[in-house]
Every structure is written in structure tokens, then in C-alpha cells.
Length: 435
Image (cartoon, rainbow, N blue to C red; front, side, top):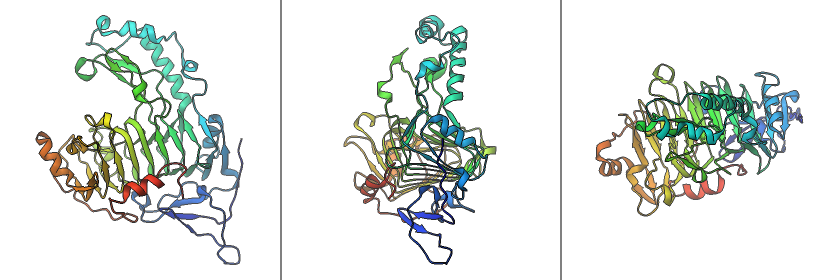
């Protein structure tokens, strides 16, 4: 199932694309060695993930806890082996978590066509949530999918893709209630919810489809480094989802959500593409007891393209967003937003580059959900320095935003000119681009 590899005393700290060898030979002489992503740790000062003891993942794994996996079953078994002992899991090739398709999860007589007949608003109405045999069968089928596609990541774990084309299709990585996790060089195709729920009462009683499963969820976890990955809807873009009852049959949720008291996370050099709801940092207005003073996240040198919203949407946290490139497509220009300003958020968004279609409203880059000041300075839109707050307030006067997040980030690597960011991020962000 696995290949165990041990490099004695080899640990590398990475700043941007510069690898610093920390290991030496027994004679005390520095030596060159083959790069091993599994032994690399987040560099000091690289975002909130470097706070305190930093993020080292499974870099200290012994010979018995280094794995190479090629199937979903092997991957899940490697995660369980050894509990919270440091471990390195090397994903080789594209691993499919749903290799047999959605039909493998169907139980209890669930049938989509019958489900649509039973809960058609013309029949069921919009005053009560769905209930009855088909809803029960949907719940049972969903439970089978849930148990199969979720993978729980333990503490002190590093997961890395091997080479340029390795990753996970349709799995949901649950970094939940743990500490010290690294994910790098993976292509992650968002899981497809086989059994979305129709809620007739949603959206002002016009109804809506609701789906489960984030590609990655960081939940109640501290010290996480998510670096040089590609997140996408891949084979199943929302544009190809059918429409039932006048609403898109929504089968995707978030790409990378950071929620429920999570803290000290660095998200760097990733690509997020072709998805609707990208990233929540804080998932509820009612979780102040859990989230206040936490949700400290740094996002830098990421590329976002074809992302409709939430890049990120923030509640409560001190979130530092710099040197990212946001590309809004023509078909998204009327509905997009990039930065969501939520309850008690302290968003610091500077030195970013935004590319918009010629007639898109710049003010829509910011979305106000609650009265929370933010810092948005030295951002460039289509190559031009732009005061995002001033433009937002002029174009959307009913949602006036205040400037000044109330804090200044100190945990930053080299801050590039926002004019150079599209080129730098375009060539170096994403899976297969670890240099």
C-alpha cells in the first residue's frame, strides 16, 4: 500500500520559491540533497500559519509513517495509521474518491425523477420543508456518500502531490479539530453532491437546492499551510448543472472554508478556478463565542479565476490578503464579488491585482454584509491604482463601507508590486508549480 522513505535530519524551510536546507551530515558539513516536499515546513514570518511554533505538518515523520498512495482506500488507510504521529502522505496520480459514480450510494428507493415529482412546488407548495419517503431515501443515500467521500486529516500531517499531475477527485478533506497540517502540490476537484436537498421555503419561499461537501474544510483547527494547490470544479462545472423548479441543481459547496474557531492559517500560491462559492472564513454570525479572537488567516500569491464570490467572505477574523490576482470573467461581471465584509471582520486587503471586463462595476469587488471597517489600499484594477472603498461607496451608496481594519499585518513574506502580481502569480501559483 505504501512506500516508506526516511531522510535523517532533513528538514527544509521554504520562503516563496527558495528552499533553505537545514540538515547537515554527521560531520557537520552542509550537503546537497534531493528536494523532498514532505520534509518542508512553513517559513518563519510567512503569514498567520507561522505564528508561535509555526506549521511543520508531518515533516518529522519516521520511516514507518511515510506513505505513497495511489487509491482512495490507501489514502484513507494512511491517514488512520499511527494516529497523530507525524506522517507524510504522498499522493501519486489522480485519486478518484467516487470511482463508481453516484449510483453506488443510492439506497432506500431514492429516484431523482420521483423526487422531482413529489416536491414540485406546484404539488408540494413552498410553506413546508420536504418530508416523506423520497426525502427519507435522499437522506439515507446522502449518508452513504458522506461516509465514503470524507477523509479526516489527523494532526501533524503533510499531504503532497507527486510531480505535476497528482491530486484528489471528488473527495472532501476534513481538517477538523486537529493541529499542524500541510497540504501542497495537489489538484483538488470539488466533490459533487449526488443528492442535493430541495428546500421549498428557501430564498423567500421560491425554493432552492442546497448541497454539502467542501473540497477542504478547516474546522476548529490551528496551524495549517495550504500551498501550491489547484482547486476547481473540474469535470462538473456549475454551468453544466441542470435546472429544476427554476433553480440550478446546485451540487457544489465551498472550495476551502476555514471555520469554527480555526486559527493561524496560511493560504499561499494556490489556484482557485471555475467555482461559485469559494471561501468562507467564519461560517455563521452566531459563532462569536468560538470565533472571536481567532480565524487569523493570511492569503497571498493566489490566483482566482472564474470564482463568482467569497474570495474570501470574512466574519470575525483578522485576515491578511495581499499579492493575489483576481480575474473576473465576462459572464460573471453582473453577479460577482471578491471581498465579503461580515460581522466583526478585520479584513486587510492590500497590494492585490484585479482584472475585470471593460464594463464591469469596480465597486462590486467589495460586498458589505455587516458594519465592519476594512483596510483596502494599493490595489490595482486593470493595471490602475484604485481606491476600492471609495469606488464601492460611490457606486453602491446604500452599502457604505468604512476604512481602517484596526490592525497592521507583520507576518508577511516579500510584498510584490501589484502591477507585477499577474505575471508572478500566473506563472508560479497552483499545483505542479512548486519551484
